[in-house]
Structures are given as C-alpha cells and as structure tokens.
Length: 311
Ligand code: GLU
Image 1 (cartoon, protein in one colour):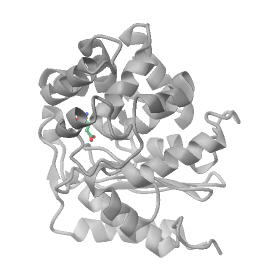
Image 2 (cartoon, helix red, strand yellow; image 1 turned 180 degrees about the vertical axis):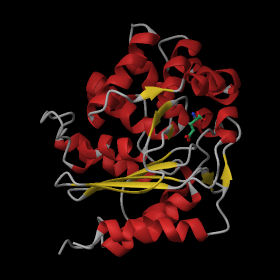
Image 3 (cartoon, rainbow, N blue to C red; image 1 turned 90 degrees about the vertical axis):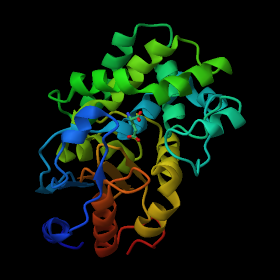
C-alpha cells in the first residue's frame, strides 16, 4: 500500500498553497466566523491505524454528515418501512430545495437532503421526547467513534433553530402531505441538534469505520447495521452524498462520501479506509471546495476507488 502518511502530508501542503479556498457558509451565523484557512485530514485504515494531518484534531460542525448517522439510527428503528417515506434518487437540486418536495407529494427524494433528514428525525423522535432522540443520536455517534467527549454545540443548534426558516418550510410541507407525525418544532429540534454535533476529523474518521467494515463497529465488535444495509448506505452516499454535485464527486473521487456545510466530508473506501477531511470554504453547491480536491488527490494517488479492481 502507498505511504498514506506521506500522501496526507503532501496534500496538506498543497491545500495550504491554494489561493481559492471557497466561501464559508454564512447562513448559520456561528459558521460564518470559522477561518477558511483551516484544513484537516484523518484516515483510519482497516487494520486500525490512524493517520492525520493539519487541523485534524480540531472540532467542527459536522452539519449534514450527521444525516449518515441519522439514517443508520432511523433504519434500525423503522426498518425498510423507512423507504415508504423517503426516496433513494439523487435530487439534482439544492440541499434545501422546496420545489421538488411539492412535486413529489411530500416524499423527499433521498435521506441526505434536508427534507429527507427532517423525515428521518421524525422517525427517530417516534412518540418520545426531542431530548431523548437527541441523546440517542449523540450516543450512537460516541459509540461509533469510541469517544465520549463528542458533544453537541448548543450555540450552533440554537442559531440554526432561530434562522432555519427554509427547514421550517420543508417540515411544514412534509407535514401537510402527511409525512410527519410529530409537530414541526419538535422535529426540527432533533434535526438541528444532530447537525450541530461537533467532531474533529480524527473523531469523524473513527465514527465512519462501520461503513468501511460492513456494518461492524470494531470498537465493540458489535454489528451496528447488517452488511446489506451498510452497502446501501454507501450506495446512497455515492449517489446522493453531495447534493446536486454528487455526480461530479463520484466522477472525480469514485468513492461514497457525505459532505456538510461546515466544510467536512466523510469518505469511505469499503474494506480499506474511513477518511474525514475538513476545509470550511465551500463551492457553489455547498460542498467543501478544498476537501473535495484533497479527497480526489488522496483517492487517486492511493488507488482507492470502487470502480477499479483491487490489486
Ligand atoms: N443544518 C444545515 C441545514 O439544515 C445542514 C445543511 C448541510 O450541511 O448541507 O441547512
């Protein structure tokens, strides 16, 4: 195998030198203050080795990457019945688009756009209290990463709730079509807190290990998800993980990934590696600009792709 630490070190240097770092998301106020100069990368290999570079230990807002963990939790609760309420097609639209939701009668295109994750938050909430549902999500992430220090940034969650008018509209729309059982504000409480989980690249790459290992959490030895469902989550990350930029990401990187507007991306090389990258500046579609370039280089140079025979 290529010397991965060497590859990371080179990529960190290359990214530092790039003049165009993209635009930091400013529609969630606390995210607007994050420096676009941050860059971190962490790789956990199948044998358990962890390799890091740059700001890999600094926590950032995982935002939509949480949708992967919410899907894991919601699938465990609702089973395949979940697919009656959320689709599995790439949206080809912005992550917070409302037009498609109307056209498709309140059934979101996939679990990785905001509307889809709002419906999953309703499933996770069930008949319980938002506080419990939020606690369950955080517990899952901590278990997956093997790290009890992971926490929710309340400041981010509150800011998002105070300014998330589009998400309110999406939730109200889903409710109008009968695809939300709970009240809009309770569901959004669960949704926003999941988005506000703060993790470093190192913690995130650890949390992604089950997706590289067929659903097994190497920390506990327990099967978090069946291999079959794990494969499906990876398939959805590949086809829907980068909003209306998903085709481009698959074309360039060739591996399942999920981005968030905090500038993080979780990337899975099945059987080989779980990777997290963080660069807060975004491209026009809301995906980390340097993060995408860095992952394209890492996957290309390491020879990782689901489309190439493994040597
Ligand atoms: N919390 C963000 C929102 O609801 C998530 C967006 C994202 O990361 O794509 O707008």
